[in-house]
Length: 50
Image 1 (cartoon, rainbow, N blue to C red):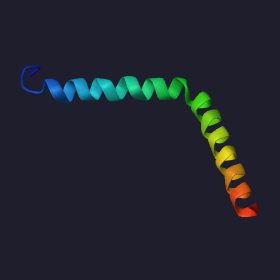
Image 2 (image 1 turned 180 degrees about the vertical axis):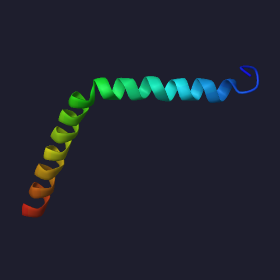
Image 3 (image 1 turned 120 degrees about the horizontal axis):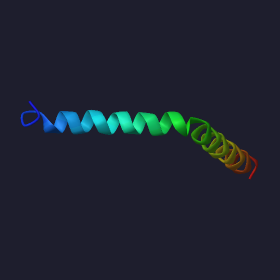
Image 4 (image 1 turned 135 degrees about the vertical axis):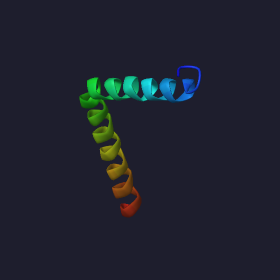
């Protein structure tokens, strides 16, 4: 079976590792997204003002 679907297994394992990393760094990612959102809001305000 491993010889038949090596790509599927590697892809699923990759998704699992990625999901675990995201779950562990969820707070950090959320903080970064929040900062990016604030920056875009500030830029939008500056653009609208000018």
